[in-house]
Amino acid sequence: MYEASIKDRQVLVVVEALPLAPDDYVIALLTSAERNVDRANELITEYSIDWPLERIALVDRLVMTLAIAEMLMDDAPPKAVILDEAVELAKVYSTDASPKFVNGVLSSIAEIVLS
Image (cartoon, rainbow, N blue to C red):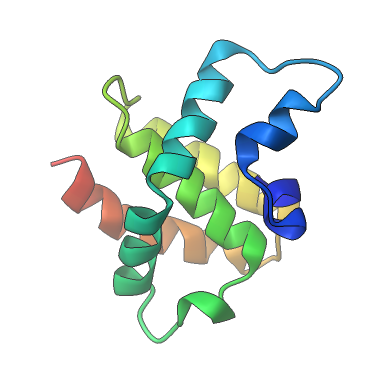
C-alpha cells in the first residue's frame, strides 16, 4: 500500500508486479482496503480529533486503513487481534508516538464498526 500511495497506483497493480505473490488473505485484505479507502478516510478524520487527514503520517494512515478494511471484512478477526497487529505495524514502521495514536483512533473506530 505504501508503494502504491507513493507511486499513485492501484494497490493490486503494485502487487501484480511483485516477484512473489502474497497469500490469498493478503490479497483479500488489500482489496478490502482499496474498496473501503473512502470510508476509512472518513472514519480516521472523524476519530483523529484535531488531526486533519493530510497531517497524519502516511504510514499511520495506511496502517489504520488496513485495520479498518480488516474490520469491514465479512470474516473479520477479533478486535483485539486487529488492534494488536496495527499497533505492531506502527511500532515497526512509524514514529515512537504512532503506536499510541493508531491504537487510540482505531479503538474508537472499532467500537462503531465492530459493534
